[in-house]
Length: 380
Image 1 (cartoon, rainbow, N blue to C red):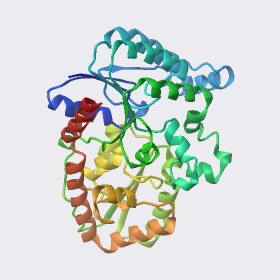
Image 2: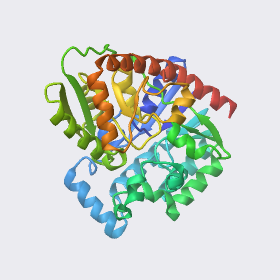
Image 3: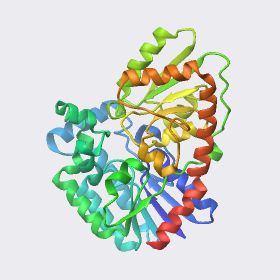
Image 4: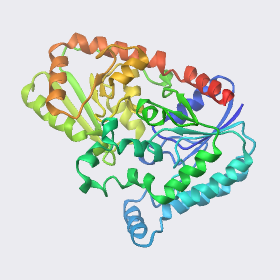
């Protein structure tokens, strides 16, 4: 098959591409590299403005005052020039409704032409979109990345990226895509819960992880326990970073001779992956039901993750609690209690790390997952 993947978040499409190629298919990936993460693409949409802090701020003010976003315009122009190359693919998959990072009007123009040139278009519900944000805005559906906003609506500007999906122009984009795509696939439990009753929903396919690129080293806990917290400033509220920071402060004061604590902020993807190599425990996020992509990569390396591991996820994979990951909650005392349990029982760290590696190899192997995508597309 000839496959076109559009957009990239957390290396998902790169890993899927590698799995599809291993199965003998021809794959093209076009994306903006997901900002600071700098992921590879066959066709990379670039912006000198976005890469320059001063110009980025200036563009933000222009966008705020006049509604003109020069970064989006650059992406739009580049993709428009590339459109003649994107014809007659057997499958086209968008990673998200906002896969190109342009305005909704620009997206509709580009998608309209793209859809005329290709027949089978699929949408991957990876990241926020109209359906998931509507679902997350209802507190009866459980906690989510929008919980901090629901607890304090004064944070509206901070959550503007998420809330844009319920504005009129993004609703139009959502309606356009819903009408023209063949089906929707979710990448994890958080999105699956929102899409379960959607008429075009084709099911959950777990994130593909290229475990061949991630070296597994069995954890040894003979000395101090190394705890790592990687912070992304743009998503720190959504991930509940403050809960982890407060819990780590307590742990550092209580067990100075037993732990080493390190944290980083806004590292490029390749640097981030290397930065937790020596860690035993990695703190990921508190407002999720399932693991994010970086969490899975850390688990593949045999780390103990504090991440989404809710009962719905346990049931889906037929797992017992605390066997392959620690379910993180927005509760400092709870996080301290779980960290203390691991510090006092280092053999549990080794056991969970080994099971985490086996779990990712079994349930998220990039070639197995690529085959599941092929089966789903063929049925569609």
